[in-house]
Length: 190
Image 1 (cartoon, helix red, strand yellow):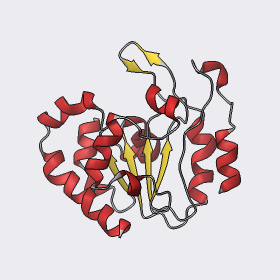
Image 2: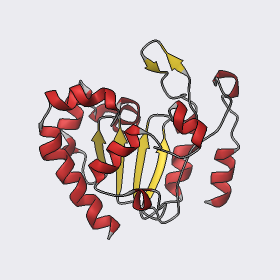
Image 3: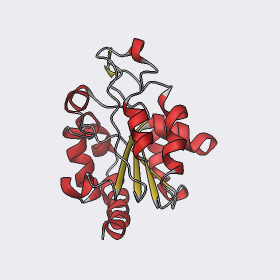
């Protein structure tokens, strides 16, 4: 795993498309139990080099019911984005994750983590990539149908502060999905 992580962190495959150059952000261990597959690092994370080191990460940890020490314990959580580097700014937020990363690195990482018990799919990019034809028409429908994907996958919306409106329109997320997620994580953290 150490050599693979070194190769990922040295990757320059899409260097020419990145506004600040490559800085692949990833956390994983051969004994990780939960894999969180997000979108791509935001600018703050790209600058700090720490995955989920922003408001979205704070909300995600709340959803999981874990503190920072637990969250950054690679023996529990592998943090693997769809795109490993900050993709740049678009018209309405960050650009989509670079498409090269997941096909290049994900399976190699997952092959080195035989004890994974749950893969969390955050947002449309990871859900489309991993759920394929099982994906529902909308992200809301996919997340609402989360039980269909268990025990292997659990789809979530992005924990961005920009999604607070979505959460208010979909109170079932906080009352049904979050308690299920916390119960599963609690069993794996202890």
